[in-house]
Image 1: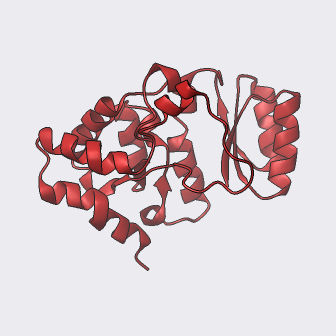
Image 2: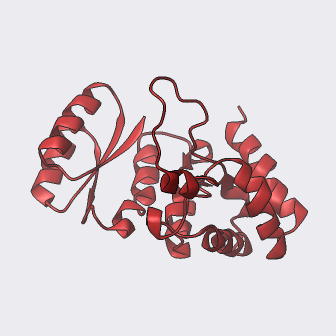
Length: 204
């Protein structure tokens, strides 16, 4: 599992020790360079220097993730960097895409101030901009949603339920695809996001 740990306090240090031992893919964000260097050397994890409370830092780890995987011998054509729609900075996306990897926009419906994320409209503008720059063959659409919960039921307030009502895979068909067509994307370009690109990623 890929996990980002924000801060190396008592809780963060305990989590790193446990999760590293379990073999999870960890990224530590902290403002203390000495702590980062020590953790990187001790646990062989990826580190990011910055304020872990900053959304800019939290959403800009894709370049380091891609570089780490490629340096470890992974084929860029088989790498998809997830949660990329947390940032709508086209230049950041281009830096990731220049590595030859795929970017996965997978959190549609989770948007706005409540989640401290861009809106779906901004994400669609980003997709169009990247397609216009020639990256249409490297964009994936997906959704990081919980469809089956094994164990205790999820307890949500009415506000949470209302805020999360569109945070599911249906939003792509109901909202995102029509939005992309309105922006002038062709059926062929949209088909690449849904079919041709995943086929290329998972082809043997």
